[in-house]
View (tube, rainbow, N blue to C red):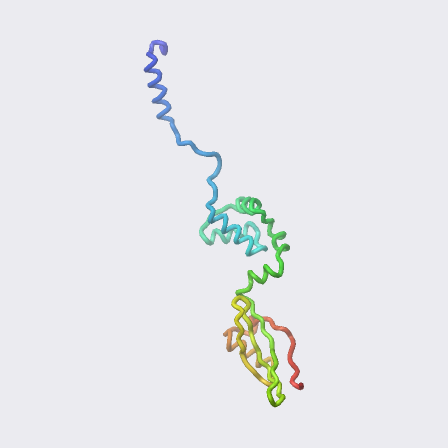
Length: 174
C-alpha cells in the first residue's frame, strides 16, 4: 500500500512526523555553575583554609546557593586548590595576618623620660587593619588592673576577650 502513495505524500508525512516529534536540542550533562558561584567557592576556600567541602557547601546553602559537595570538590580541583588539610598547612603567617587583620590588636608600653628625669609609661594599642594607634593612658606606675581598666574603657568588652599582649611589665624603679 505504501507504494500506491505518491512521492509528495510520503515527503509530506515524513515532515509531519519530524515536526510532531521535534525536541529542542539539549547539550549533554548538567548546566554549568554561574561564574559568581565559582568565584564564591574559590573565595571561601582561600579565606578559610580549614573548611572542607561539606562546610563550604553549608555556607553556600546559607547564602542561598544549592551546590553539591562533589561539585565544590571539582571546582576547587579545577582551580588548583587542594583539600582542606593541605590548604591549612599551606597558610603562612602573612596570609593569616591578612585574613585576620580586622580582628587583631597589638598593645605595648613606651616610656618617656621627663625633663626632671621622671619616667612615665604610655600604654598604646594599634589596630592592625587600619594601623591606627590609640594611646590609652599614661602613668608612672602601671599595673595589670590599670591596663585592664583602660582596655575595658576603650573597647567595652569583658576581660576574657581582651587582646593578648606581651607579659612585659615595665619596672617602676628606673
